[in-house]
Image 1 (tube, rainbow, N blue to C red):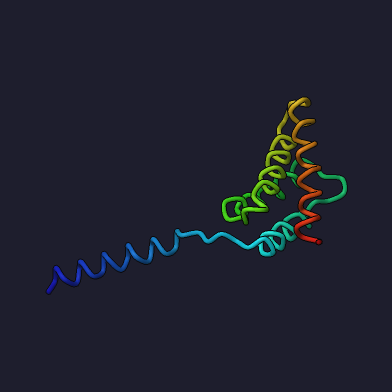
Image 2 (image 1 turned 30 degrees about the vertical axis):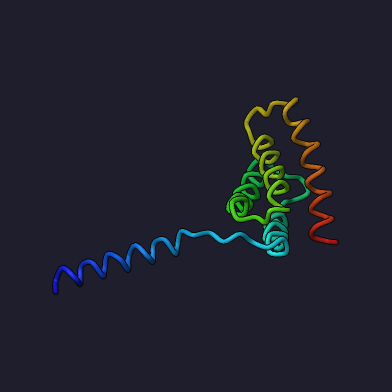
Length: 113
């Protein structure tokens, strides 16, 4: 009886742990909402600290972003990460800036309609 109880408890713990770690993909609307809330924290004169905070707010959205929004979220994060570096690579920042602008356009199309 003791072994059966132990096995059942272990099976329950494994099942609950796997249920907690399973991430569901968001819809495009849900992704738009979450990115919008995170991006609302960007001040007009963004400091490195503010940039890092916004990037960290958006970072958990990337793995669960909708298929349409994943490239948008990735481009935003890559740009913010490079911009927040102590000495950003200007050439890379230029490339990422262009991708960031495209991501903004795509965000507008998908989220504002």
